[in-house]
Image (tube, rainbow, N blue to C red; front, side, top):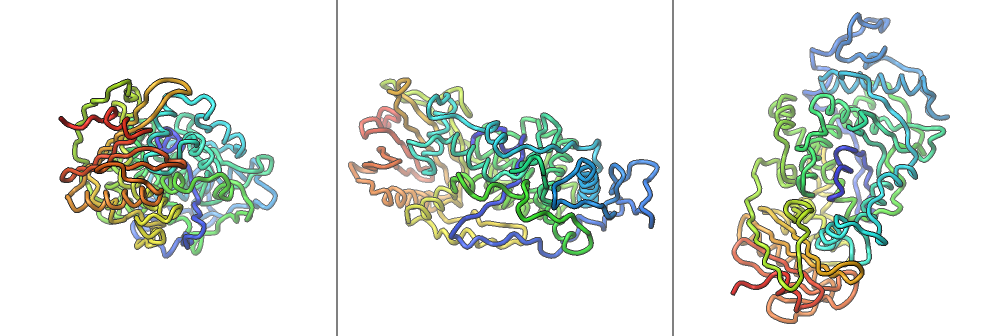
Length: 485
């Protein structure tokens, strides 16, 4: 996103609203089996809910999972109410997840404005090397154009959407609210972030394997991390609709899903949301087949591509070897990503095709198909013909010159499972160029004459590989990626 640590170390709970797409309501549905009170390890309170002599699964800080609490959020939460609310929620997470918290989890509130200031990305006035590199990644995906800072777009999108996050570096949950003087907390947000705290205590989320050097690796790890939290969140919501009394959340509460959609780039938002959508299905399948031990094993070896989460497969990306042959001053950003490259993966490619179909009418995919989710744990559908069959990709941003005179381009090497998959990707990509009125200048060479994506493009296929070269002018293409002699 490649705004790392914003996705895992500060894990967020998002509410996505895709206006005009017929987005489904996220319903809890019936309770599933295998993760709740059927767990015999959960302790049973007596009729008076007396405290046990030692800490037990299903009891935390003076409260049992099924104990009533006197908490009214209509006028905000007092310190005493917040403590009771958090303690019982921790007990309920233990009940559902079958794991004991090692220590109490602090919860504090943060205004949305302060959160936005803390998480703001690069600026168009003084972009860093990373910002310039990442700008090319998002431009290659046709999500942010040449006049828009990807860092600013990511920051504003997340600030508008975030409901709360857990910070492993602080061992603390921070709830985002529009009214920090009278805070309220959505049940689902609190439970979601408590699962992240439990994960951190059990697995240590600061480990490098939960981060990733590429956008796709980040989304993949988040598919497990956010999938686990979202799955438990759904179980909790089902209990609130039946066996459990739950604290009501005022309709206008902070920490309940974000700021209503202002300042959001839907392409970025949909990319960020993919682990929250496909992750619960991924976790449900693992738990169904192997119990929570299967999740423990997966945290030892997290998924490495969004393809693995979307399709619930262990298929690994095929290697892509790349030798830089640029000339006449064009250089990679060798200190960024993996040797200067990013891997955007299947999820981000799906978003590219969906976003361009929605925004420009490109003949890529039916944008309404995003709601064709089959599992009750799924929210949106991230599968499409031109993005399926992904084998791997490496996207190398390039630069020439410095300061205001700098020019930029990229080489995007994509590998596919079959020649048919490669042809379908190339066809859909060509449809994006057509939607931007690209003019053909030579064989496989096109120019978008104006607009946010005004550039030259060379698009070639060789077997299962499709390579896209981008630069300011047609003559730059052979400098950025000389043709084989």
